[in-house]
Image (cartoon, rainbow, N blue to C red; front, side, top):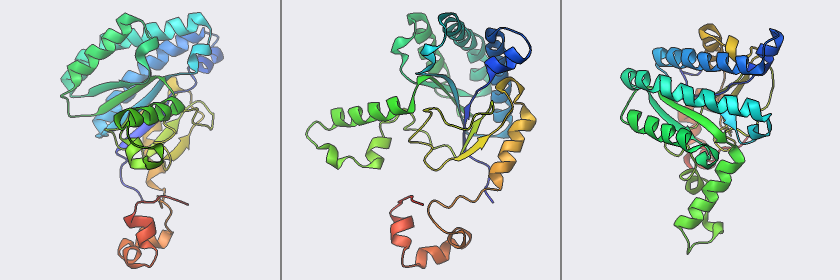
Length: 258
């Protein structure tokens, strides 16, 4: 059985369908979704979680109708302006990952200010992924590595070297990824970082995902056996695994296969 995860990532899906089911505009669903972000962040902080990463807006979401995109940007700005003071007081650190260059200057400024205002907080680390895509993250990391090592060949780039240039370089990889809304895919979210993450899918739309639903996901995670390429016996008896002939390959070298 697993202990409490350090890092939970969430794909907050189903806002529009939540609203449609109630014969409301999709924008109402997004507004309720933002309200639930506030609720779940407080719950995660109270539970003592160390890292929470929320997928707010993907690089593909620009394809949505312009009025919906505009509403989402407005809600993001509103969230930053209304929540940062409380986060600062509560000891929550906020950071935003993704390509900010497409955002309006005012939104970019508010993001920068929010990060500066909470940078010294030591409680929950809240990360918002906005205009983010996992493929963009990996490609950007490769380019950053090459820029930092102009005299070296890409043949010398290894996983550890690439990971140092990801947007989440100073965060542990998530142990648990939750997706609401009934879909069973990760939609270009943290592709590198979720290589060995436990994936939990629920039919609940994001506005309906409450404390009890979060606890249920954590309980599910607690029953998972995280092998990282090893057998159940190796996980249950780690000392014996270290003494086995294959331990150098699987454990000491940190190669995660299987």
